[in-house]
Length: 536
Image 1 (cartoon, one colour):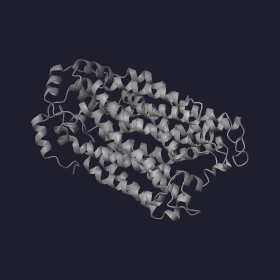
Image 2 (tube, rainbow, N blue to C red; image 1 turned 180 degrees about the horizontal axis):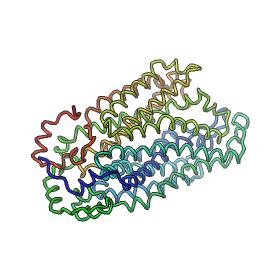
Image 3 (spheres, rainbow, N blue to C red; image 1 turned 60 degrees about the vertical axis):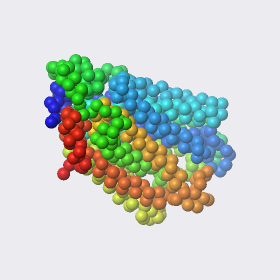
Image 4 (cartoon, one colour; image 1 turned 30 degrees about the vertical axis):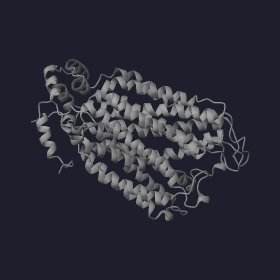
C-alpha cells in the first residue's frame, strides 16, 4: 500500500506556479545556455583556425586536417560524456547544490582559458585548445544531470514537464547567441580590418587580427555563467535530497518554508520511517535495481543514444546545403573574416527557423500530450523527413530544388526538438529513485553523448563521396550522403521502438514514478506484474 507523502514533498507537488519556479528555470537554464553556446561556437571558428594555423600556399585556403578537426570539435564531447557520469554520481553522493557550483566555475575558467590558448607552433595552440575544451566539456557534462534533477525536484507535478523543458529550451537560445556573437565580432573586425579575397591575395586575406576573433568568441561563453553563479549558490538544496537522502527533515522543512512562503512541519520520525523501509534502498548495480528500473534505464539510454546520432549528424550536409543555395560562397572567393560571418549567418538562420521553435512547442504541450506521445511522434516524423531527404536525394541537389531541401532539413530538427531531443532530457529526471536520480540521468545523457560522437564523427567519414577523388581532402571514400541519410532514418526508427521501454510520467509525483512511496512488499508485488510501461 502506498504510504502518505511527506508534507514537504506534497507541498512541492501541489504548489501553484510561483516566482521561485521561474527563478529556478532561469538559474538552471542559464547553465544550459552556456553549455550550448560553448559546444556550438567552436563549429563557427574551425574554418578560421584552418586559415590561420594550416595555411599551405595552395589554391584553396588552409583547413584543419581530418584528425585535428575531429579533435577540436570532438574533445568537448568526450569531456561532456565523462562529466555526465562523474557529476551525475557525485550529485547523488554529495548533494545537488554542492556540486552545482563546481560545474559552473569549471565552465567559466575553461571558457576563458580556451580563448587564451597558447603555443609557439600551430600544434601547440591546438593542443592547448583541446586540453581546455576537454575540461570545459567535463563541466558542461555535470550540468546535464544536475540541472534536470534540481528542476524536477523543485517543480510541481502538474507542470513539471514544462519547467524541465524550459530549462532545456535555453539550449536553443545558447546556440542562437553563439551565432549572433560570431556575426557581430566578425562583422566588426571585417569593417575595421579590410582584406582581399583569398584568390586575390592568399596571405593578405587573413589579417593578423583574425587571431583575436576566435578567441573573443570562445571567451564570451564565460559571461552568462559568471552572471548566474551567485544565484546558483543561493539556491537551497532540494527537499528531496535533504529529506530522502540526507534524512534531515528539519532542514528540508526550513528550506522549503522559505521557498514556498508557507509553514511546513518537520516530520523527522516520518522521514526515518519513509527512508528506512523505502522501496528505493538499493544500489545501481544491484539485482533489485535491474529488476525494477533496468528496463527503464535501457530505454532512456538507448533512445538518447539513437537520437543524438541523428541530431549531431547535421554537420554532414550543412556545408553542401549552404554552398548550394549561395549562403556560403566558395572559400577561395572570401577572406577569412567574411567566411566566419557567412558561416555564422547561415547556421543562425537554421537554428532560428528549425531548432528554437521546436523547444518551445515542447514546453507548451508536454504536460498536455505527455512525454511518451511527443517522443514517439518526434522519432516518427524525423524518420519520415530523413527518408524524404534520402529517397529523392538527387532531386534535392539539382539546381532550383535547394530551398525544398532546406525546408525538409529544418523540419527534421523541428521535430527533433519538439520530440526526443527534449523528452530524452526530461524523462530520466522523473522516473528513478531520489538516491539514484542524478546518477541515472548522467548515464542516460552519457549514452546520448556517445551517440553524438558517432553522429558527428563516424558519419563525417561515412558520408564522404564513394569516389575517393571527390571526397574531402584527407578523408577516405565513404558511403555517400544519401546512404548516410538512410542509416540515420534507421536510427530514428529504432528510437521509435525503444521508446516503448520508457514509462509516462505526466501528472505523477516523482515518488509515484520511482515507487519510493510504497512499502517493500507492495513494490515487489507490483513489479512482478509491471511488464508494460505505456498506460492504456
